[in-house]
Image 1 (cartoon, rainbow, N blue to C red):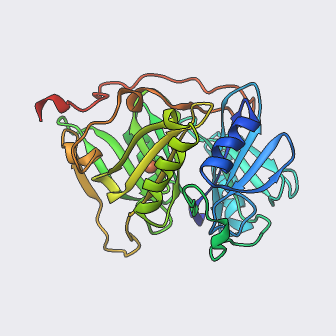
Image 2: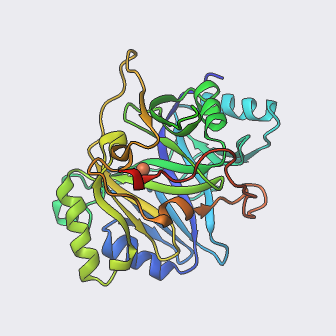
Image 3: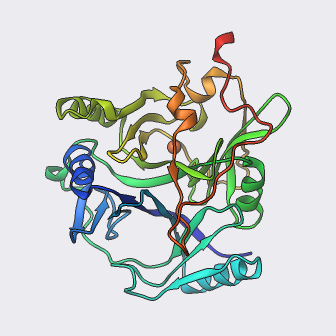
Amino acid sequence: MNANIIRTARTIINVTDLDAAKDFYVNALGFIETENDGEHLYLRGLEEYHHHSLVLKKSSQKGVQALGFKVYSKADLETLAAYFENINCPVKWFNKGDQYALGEAIRVMDPHNIPLEFYYEMETVESYLRRYDKYKGARVQRIDHFNAMVPEVESVHNFFINELGFRCSEYTVTKDNKMWASWMYRKPTVHDLALTNGHGPRLHHFAYFLSDPTSVLNICDVLASLGFSASIERGPGRHGVSNAFFLYLKDPDGNRIELYTGDYYTGDPDFKPLKWDFDDPHRQTLWGHPAPDSWFEEASAFLNVHTGEPVTTKDSVGVQKKPNYAKY
Ligand SMILES: [Fe+2]
């Protein structure tokens, strides 16, 4: 399959309280509110000149509607649609305007039950990159990647690498040589989609790039001052994997968002994936401190793109879920 997927482009998530979501994402984190129709919040980062990269839809059903990727052209959309139909993954088409500010799009459940969306055009707006008067909270710059928790990492990894043309930047293997996690990219950074072993498929987190570590630290102070301390789940810290300077937060509905900076360029053809040992404590946190239990257990449900119902999940098979930090 030879479609040109450019990058991670937007997330569509159901939230139960749009006002609470706005308070968290806009008033605290500093996302730019492009539009709010009372049912949807359309948000973007300061650097982004497309209409939005995050849609929060008011709903009593929590969950993630789709992981959105931008493709280069209509021909790429058609190639993807034909490919998925051919492997018995029915494709749901959207005409231009069916989704607000968006051109033609397709949504599909991939063979591992991850809801994917592809599109090639979205309305453009002003980039606020140089509008420093708009810099608030975390000074969120742009969407970067998704991280999905899946029971069988290697088979999902093989699908994205071999069928959708992703490349692997880093990966983790267990002592018995099972793939535990994988970081895969289309744009030349560490990842557009990461896979982590665990009960799933579910969305572990979606991530936004910040311009510097100071922004990561600053948002912790802002969150504390606004009464959002409980939303800080993990960090700030430095991952060994990806070299990211990270912070993980839970939104009012429990969805996990990562704010990070500090990864690196992967675009050359001779770039080779970096292999990590599962029990290496520097892999998850370069400084060595362990992640909380919630990190290994909690994630957001995916919703079926055809029915809107939560996707059936299962436990990981044969792979240890959590590193044994006790030995260090
Ligand atoms: Fe991440």
